[in-house]
Length: 612
Ligand code: AMP
Image (cartoon, rainbow, N blue to C red; front, side):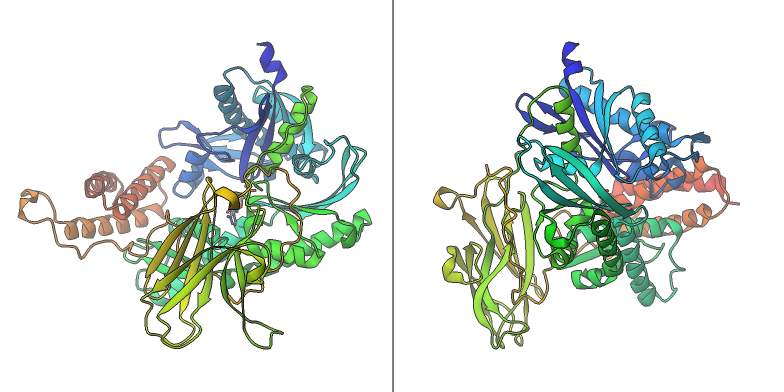
């Protein structure tokens, strides 16, 4: 029991996601919740009326919005309530459910009760909002040791104020999450970390980007569909948003994201591709707004850009490359992104917790690449008289591992059917100044005019192995090699907390854009339903419908179910229908015909009772 008093966990109670961390004898540890380092801040009731918190609740938010509460943090400190299962709840209560889930995860992990916690809040939170957070913590059974500001926590995670207090620094913490944005000027003086100014927008974040992408996809869908399948239902629109969030995440590492969503309407699928450049144009107005906030925060703190010592990135949406680029461009210095932006706030809270528990500040161990990696290519661009052969970087020094990045290149002459690709480790764009760590050929490219796109993907796994893949975009022809960077070229995996803010040169590579290649875990480009596959044949049994029949019946049932959903039906019936629609689309996507049959049968039963 004594042990539990000595443990003070750190909690990032976020609008979109939450996380919990702790400092133990052997260092800082993120506590997994349901097997993941972060947990969606979502609470819901499943169709049977059971409480669900986290990913399970997020999963059903598309099909059962009336039984799901999202973004409760926005209401903290207000008297507004939310409805769940016919009852209303205060924001503190919903937040307490989230905190309770984190507490249980910590207790399961540590094997003893966890009572004390440091909880973070945005710097702009007022007294009521802080009080509400404290109450939520107490309600969840915590003794809240302290409420600290999120930017302070981020600064602590980078070691500010914990190194004997000698360094005096000015830090800019740029936090772009799912639903909120804030930027703070934090100073560290004699070991004291203080937020000097903070500005933001509580309605700006990755969610807006998802909406914009969903709108783009919907417009494209409508353009090809021309109303033939009766337009997109509200349920389908929510599905589209979830799909486009995945596409957005892909676009942080890849130049293109393939999007395939089956049965967006009862009869039509969506199949499109979004380029990173289109996405960047789409979100630029929001990003400009964040830069305006940043200028105001600087002005309020009386600090010029030149006086900022470090830029720290917090929040999942800062993984979008253009966010970093714009910020670095505006401030004229590189940003720190070695610590996972989703976890940094919880880590800082845990460090504060450790200090309160009398433990020494731990070092945060992060596996990063100690070098940049790139390939040899002809490079040109504005201001360059003629193309020169250079090293075009694909993975930047200081990137946390594992990492997978791609970039788009083009053949340089007509009918170029093979390319020799040298792979380099080092920071220079001059190949000779880097270490050449391998070379390989990609042969058999199509006979095409110059400019034939080839996607180069570099991946470094946790063991420091570099995997290189070149793929011809038009045909999918791919060639892969693995280069062992161990031995004397070994990546420095122990370079935790090394100051890597040193210059990351801007990538003025030849690459016009970026790459393609949907992630391995995304739906493949062949994700068509196999309606045209041959039926299973006469052995399927007399009463067994053929596959095309099964799909046709599924389509018709889905259409009828979506029609019922827009009518006034009870929340329970609506939830049941949505769950069955989900089961049916999962079965179609995974080609699980018995499961589709089962979903069809159940849907048919429900419709029998509900249809006039
Ligand atoms: P947070 O509120 O900090 O948990 O951030 C959540 C937001 O970050 C959501 O809008 C996510 O879609 C977004 N996000 C997470 N990972 C990425 C990524 N790799 N690229 C772009 N956005 C991301």
